Length: 416
Image (cartoon, rainbow, N blue to C red; front, top):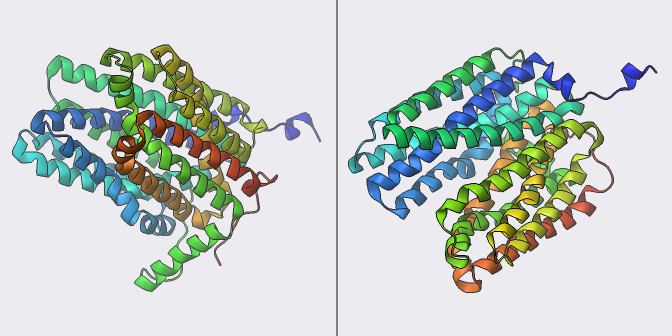
């Protein structure tokens, strides 16, 4: 066998793939727009209501569709063209975002709630469609690199979007500019996705009856519960988010109330984690051919847990920054590995359902954790919540090792 034939594909081969490039460009510009609106909404709601309950309501509305109809959305993603689903979703969300221009005084907050719910509902179809479409346009041995590149660019462009939103609001004190820019990013993303050459989609023979939809949903669930590795992926991801959701809520109280840090430190602290995430994603993309996704998940979760648990012991800001860098370093590879396994462990006609199941389970764990954060902090203290969350992540990593076994990629599961 010649050296060229035996050589494993690398990052350069991936970037030569025109379909991946179009999909990737659409993703990064959409990530930029999403982060613009995310920060703008928080600032807008705070100005209009001054209510933490209003902020919590928006967070719940954004997460609710995934938890309630996420599994059902996965069935339709597997029925429809993934490419068309993404394009329609982008166009609809662009139109919805434009509606936010009319939210100008406290009496319009109901409109903001309604538009947020509609946008989140449409987005439930987009994410599993993109996960499945990526596996249609990228070779299996390039998926880990593709997911790593996607995760890394998501972090960078989300950070850029957040910074841009702050500058726009600070200079012009105008939210309409941000919502118009976000709508444009959705439309441009749809255009880029339209350029992707991909299979038209797999359509089941049965019609869209309630019985047919339920049957296809149950077929997806059976595949999950008969695959040892898929169970390991879903359960470990849910366990981690059951802890990290609370950590995300309590991070500011830890910094401000426990350590007495001024808010000016937040940017530097976030930069430490982002730097680790970018480096971790870059290394994974470059070394993807030599890495096993299952090993990345088990070892990465254990390392993540140790880092989070140690945050409970910090007494100075430099210690937090020192810990958040390695935490970020393993987060991007773990996310990329989870996405890769959900794409490669099942046949194409099931990818939408499996992707939706992953997001639904993680979303449910995240909401539960955030809801319990305040109660846990009152009972055991903020620092002990970090310790508990870290131990849960370590447990998830340790439990994943025997579940995954030695095989990095079992045979593809098919619907029964």
